[in-house]
Length: 382
Image 1 (cartoon, one colour):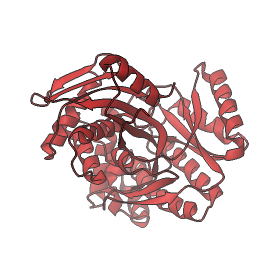
Image 2 (cartoon, helix red, strand yellow; image 1 turned 45 degrees about the horizontal axis):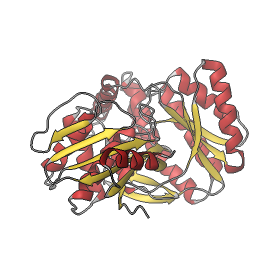
Image 3 (tube, helix red, strand yellow; image 1 turned 30 degrees about the horizontal axis):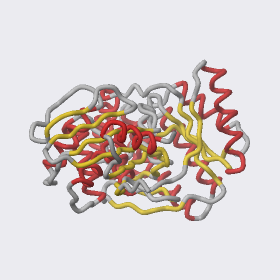
Image 4 (cartoon, rainbow, N blue to C red; image 1 turned 180 degrees about the vertical axis):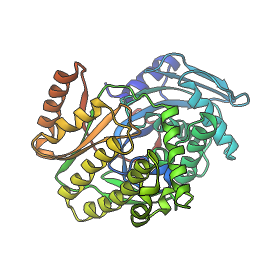
C-alpha cells in the first residue's frame, strides 16, 4: 500500500472519519553541486516522487498531535509551550517555534504520517518532514505560502533549534520542486531556475543501507574548514574565489583547506556547466560531470565511504549508465546514476546484486522521477 493510502487509512481508524487535508512533501536527490549551499555557490537538486504524507484535521485548540506509522513515540504538544524533546518530535517542535518566530499564525491539528522515503540515506527526509509540517500548519490556518520564506524558516529551525550548520538547498527544493525538472539554485542570490531533465534517461537512486554517520561534528567541521579557506583568499565565502585565484594561491594554502576549497570551487563550475549540458540535451556531458563530482567528494572533500564508492563503481560498469555520484552530505546514504531509460530496470537489478555480493548488505536501488514541491490538498474521499 502506498504511503498516501496508509496515512489516510490509519487516520480513519484513529479518528473515525476521513481527514480534512492530505499533505505531501518530497525527498530530493542532488544531481550535482554538493556541499556548495553553505558556501553560497550553485547546485542542481530535484524533488523526487518518494515523499512524506500527512493526513490531518484541524483542532479547535492550540494542540498538535501527530502519530507516525514509521517512527515510535507520537508527537503531542501545545503551540503555547514549545520545547526541546528527544526523537523525531524535535522537528515538529522546531518547526512550530521557527514559524511562530517568523510571524506566522499557527493553529492546532492532529494527524497521521506515513512515508516511503528512507531516513538517514541522503534523500533529505528531514527537509521533507520540515516542509510537510509547514504545509500542515498552513492547511489549518492559511497564510501566504512563499516557498523561499518557508524554506528559510525551515533552515533557521535546523541552524538555531537543532544546531546544524546546514544550508538551504534541501528545504528550498522541497518547497519549489517541479515535475520533469531539476532546479539550478544560486545560494548567494537565493534565486532558482527550472532546468528540464534530458529526455531518454532516468535517475536511479542506490541506497547503500549504510546510515549516514553525519554527523553534526563532521558536517560542521567542513563548514569551518571552508570558512577558513575563504578567509585565506580574503573572501567571505568560497563562492567569491575564482578558479584562477585558487590556482594562483593554492600552493600557499595548507591541507586540508586546499582540498576543501578545490572541491567547492570546482563543484560550482561543474554545477553551472551541468545546467548548460541539460539545456542542450547533452546526456554524455552531464554524466561525465556527475562522475567527476563523485571523485572530488571522495578525494578532496572526504565525505564518501567505501560502500558509496563501490556502488558508484558498479553503476559505472553497467550498460546504459552515463554517470554516477554520491548524493547528499555523505558518510553513507545514497548514490545516484544517470541511466538510459531502456536499461534502467536491468541496471537496478544488476547493481543491487553486485553490491549485495560485495558487502553482504541488501541495498534499495530504484528509479525516481522529478516531482512537485510540498503541497496540501483538501481531501475528498469520493
